Length: 322
Image (tube, rainbow, N blue to C red; front, side, top):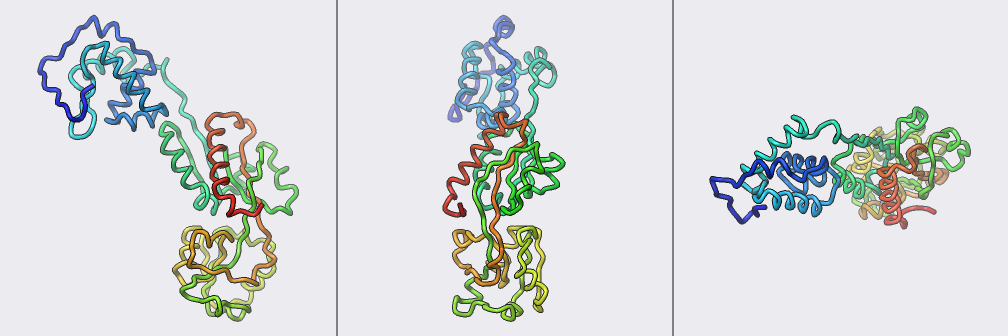
């Protein structure tokens, strides 16, 4: 294989029809050859096929050793087929079909629907989930930023993370097609940016809140059952902003001079916010459950996602209420 610092200049490529007719290529190597040619990159081809890049390169190098000439060369910092490579490509198209792989080598594309409620998606599993998607370019994923009761009832979710009221004893029994695994508990509280209110001037009565814009959470279920919040909203004479985006909701609290409901671990993410105590004492913490469709509990992709979610929660264990 010609490296990036070498130039392949020969106008006559060693070629033998007998060698091509006896190429040691199976379906997998053909897939890897065509993926590398399409991507013009060993790494991206390996990601797309979910195979180690080292193994992919070794198999292609063995192919080149058999032929006796390079099939890929670096041109302008990307891979391109050499003349030999183009002849190999033409030969393989005839052998495996015009799309580069015959029906016998076609693979079923893994498909998963993942539903992870905010704030868990953004704050806890975001980084590990991004890494998973990057390393599994061969999959078809559908990712939602909520995991609602309706979605579970209609079996739309393969893997999810849902917030459940601990007093709702029948919440899990209502979804017999899923397996639930408790990951921890998240509480919520009112917060305000320290830039707009120092600790000595924090609101202490409902009347004090009238001077501030109140941000209604992205998920109103978070405040379900809180009589204090219902009373605050009924008496509030100031402005309100209803936000369906968790990131925007947090942004309004951090930089928008607003008071809003955020997870109680939020000071670990934003040091310039202060909790506003005394207003949501009756707000119950929510249990966080990993939800997996029962028929998929042994699916390799699902097991890997479960593993990364458990890792994410372990890494943030000091954020959660046990």
